[in-house]
Length: 354
Image (cartoon, rainbow, N blue to C red; front, side, top):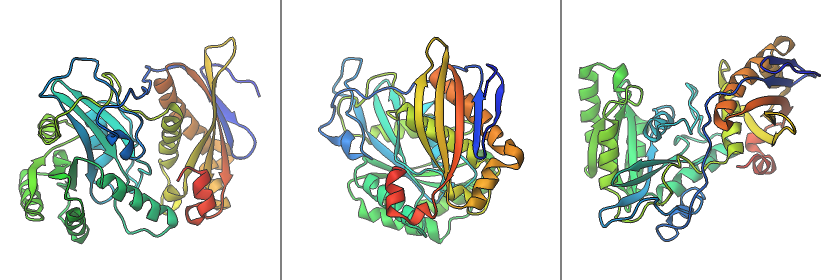
């Protein structure tokens, strides 16, 4: 099939779509530097080696790891992206979107925060859910600061109280309570949330209301968390915003595009595998081949859409994000595959990186 550069491709055989377009701004993921604090970076979700600071260290430099916890869809990934200043974690109105420990790096004049975005804590119904909860527990045991998030738009409930109480199991970490989404709540609701959250524990180092969307109070949170970090050199070189590989970020971009407009159980059934990423010879194009994996044939039909229309839309949206990441024009070919009940199958989970 011949593609015109700059035009979205047509659907190929059932379950395939091809996309080519113009590049956006580059946003390359960096590579981690050399070891900083002894072995700590490797404890957090299998972090890469930590970097030496590009600037001279000082006795006042602080660095360490922080993670945000809370019920699904309380704004943890949005908060991570806002603090880092670049989109490193996908966001969606669908709960339980995050599936891996994704690290973002925030550099400040007096230190560095490594923010570990994790899945939301939830009652698991599948083997995948159990493994995601295990991942969260592992991260919580290793970080220096835990930020407990509650949205200003919702009253605290049993789930919030359970998660707040569970933080007793991580005595090493300092705890900060965060009331998110203040831009969507009125003053009375914000005050009520602050009082509710403050009453959940007696050892909060701080209780901070903020909006990741408007960036209100983000600096206050960053300053507070950095002061709670141990003294020590920076863990990553300046300029690095994440140690995620391009392939991992491409897979997440495609999954985010696939989540739009789907409902019920389908969002949880979608996984993405990047099969190949390679620059095309004698061309400014980068070829990207990826598979969208679902659990049932009926789900495959939904992803593809009538005459391939929905898959083409997914490809067009994803291609734009991939071009911005790679800084080149991209030819994207998607294929939809069925791996029956992969969320409950240990072998399939292993193949998909879980």
